[in-house]
Image 1 (tube, rainbow, N blue to C red):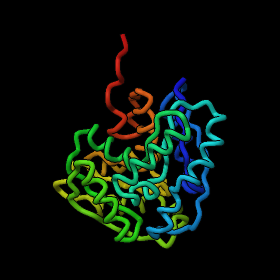
Image 2 (cartoon, rainbow, N blue to C red; image 1 turned 90 degrees about the vertical axis):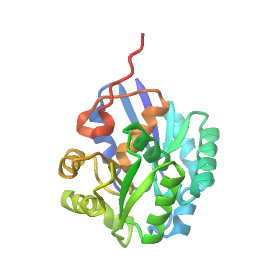
Image 3 (spheres, one colour; image 1 turned 60 degrees about the vertical axis):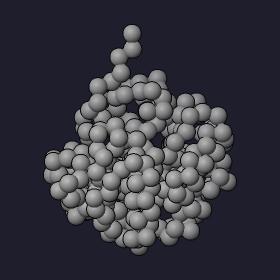
Image 4 (tube, rainbow, N blue to C red; image 1 turned 180 degrees about the horizontal axis):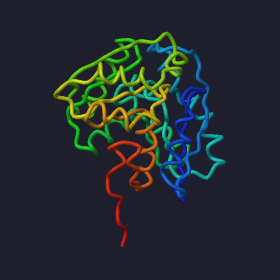
Length: 243
């Protein structure tokens, strides 16, 4: 059994994670611990406070009781708004507090893009333009070229949570550019787990979404690869063979 721990702010699209767990197989467990969501907004200052060491520490206390072996800060905006160096320090703090390998959704996007061989990526978000620009800067610091940005700002994360399949597809199509090798949808308040097959078929290229890369990043930390095509191109890599 591989047990993954996720720290997730508030209650938004958390039902994506049991769905992903079910699709991964019986020997993988995804445990979700909710942290204080604070102010329900996409403002930069609020997102920085969302990922503060104090709030992460509160989540880690509950996480220790679950027996997980890796932990991921399951909030893209609460990571990349810290900048590359700040997000690294955030993850180091999380690893120290939890006593186990740690990462974040933000780094998951960078690692996942490299995993599928996508160096040129397009980005679609429900963030304001200034927050979307910070994500693009983070991706560039991770060695990726951003071919296009599309902001479709929602009033609050709660509004994003209500988006359905057509809304998500519209955002992905609007973000896509001809030279992009993948499209990234970073908002962890967005339901995407049920739509990955449709998104990739419609765009004819890989689509990376927040819940998807968050779980994948936890598996990467645990040295696990899982072949689960319903979760998109990222999960069609051959599992590692152990001799």
